[in-house]
Image (cartoon, helix red, strand yellow):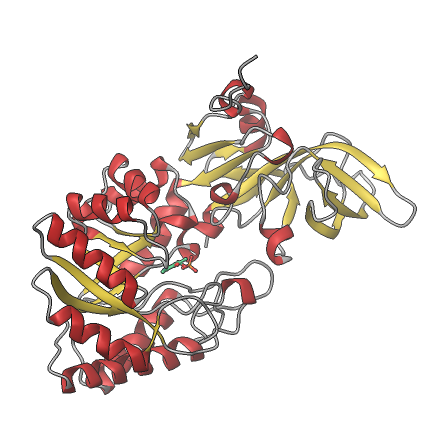
Length: 418
Ligand SMILES: *Cc1c(COP(=O)(O)O)cnc(C)c1O
């Protein structure tokens, strides 16, 4: 359920027409709905029905400071995958004591900074990383909490690029090696064994892979207990999918019920952490773009728009399908099948293919479900400044990121000396 809808044939975010935003902010831009973001976060929080839990929002899905700040105000924790994301969380008013740090390649300075600000937990992805964290904790005379991210070898049945829980993926530590890593951590004066972590992939549309992973995590917790290692939480990652087209993913409540049932069957009452990203943000944002030209090719019609793959990469990267709707419905116009393409010089530069649209030249289009893995993946390819982001709040809207200027785009570049 989101707060984007038509009112008298004009597409609105909450109580603001997207025509008004395009007029005042220009295109392309992202438009988020505060009410939708908050609703989705709360839906997950409420779905636990009192079971002890922490929601650590996955920052990489949408890292805009205003978005992070909304979640911080609601008491959210954060899952980060880089030092830059940690700084964003801090800048947005997030509590470092509710931050978990995931990722296979944590650098020294990233770890040092995370130790200095006192994050909740490092989700460790290799024995070498554990050693590095230990030596940096020792150097700082600190004791830091760790969880080992295990690789449960579960097929998430999602796009291969966003599948992370198979043994051929770079993520996590195989269960058979993980016990040893825990032994080493437990023996260290500078490490405190806190949890076990697992994240098997993104855009999962069925419960079965999750349940499979939960069961393997719980079996692993038993093995640890057998080795005398006790935990204080289970981190089950993110990954719950959303409806882009005709998927019918489990609802947050289906997910939490299955999770809690699994814990109960197992006699486990440990607090859980989850790291949802996409499910909170995807359908809380649209990408707003304007048609530059309608062009009839030899085989197809094209709607050439001012937004491109550098602004919204998912269609090019994952062949992802996102709904494209006209901001103004005009039933007097003829409808055709268009490939909606951007100005970038790549044939992968499309936002959608064969979309049946009744549009005039210069029409505004909204690409739906763009709130997650949208602006965060944007680049300056083709020397295109990164686009603006707008947050709608009831009948008001706020520019939460200015459109980048050319000067900002080249700010760090230098010519060679003459
Ligand atoms: C990307 C990621 C998430 C969030 O995944 P979603 O599919 O957006 O919910 C959570 N945890 C980790 C470790 C991740 O890498």
